[in-house]
Length: 230
Image (cartoon, rainbow, N blue to C red; front, side, top):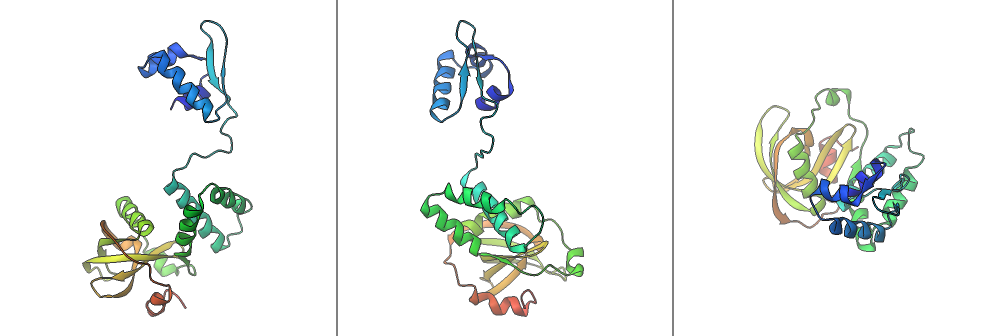
C-alpha cells in the first residue's frame, strides 16, 4: 500500500505519511528502510520537509504473485499453448520460463504435475456450447482448491435430464473441450471413474481427505464411453 502511494504521488513527506497511516514517523522511516532492502528505488530530498518518492519506473515488468496465482497463470499459459491459438502467443514461452525460474525445484515439480493433469480435447459441439452456463464462483473456488490439493469434494450435481444427486468425488484431472470444462474424477457413490461437467455442479465443499493420483489410463474408457475423447 505504501509503495503504491509513493509511486503515484509526486511529493510525500515522512510526517504526511505518518499522519495518513496513523503511525509514528519512526515507523514510516523503518518501513522505508525495509522497502529499500527489498530493492525498491526510493528517493529522498534532503533538508527539512524533504519528500520521499518511489521511482515511477520501478516495478515495470515485475509481478508480485502469490504461489497459487502463479500456478493459475502457468496453467492458463499451458492451456493456451496446447490449444495452438495463433493469436497473442509470441511471448507466452518467455513468460512461462520466467515464472518457472522463480520457483524452487520442489514447487517446479508440483507445477509440472498440475499441468500434466490438464487435458485438452477438441472444441465442444455447437449443441453443447448452447447449453453452457457459468459455474458459481464458490463452486469454482472449491473445485480449484480440491484439484490443486488433491482433496475429496462433496458436490451436488445436476444431470442433463435435470435429476440432481449428491456425490463425493476425487478430482484427478480437468478436461477442457473449449469452452466447456469437465472434472475427470473417481466417484465414491459409483466406486468408478466418472466425468462431471463443471457448469452442472450446483454446490461443492471440500472434505479435507486427500487422495492418491491415479494414472490417466484409469479414466480412458470412461472418457471414451462418454464421448469426450475419441
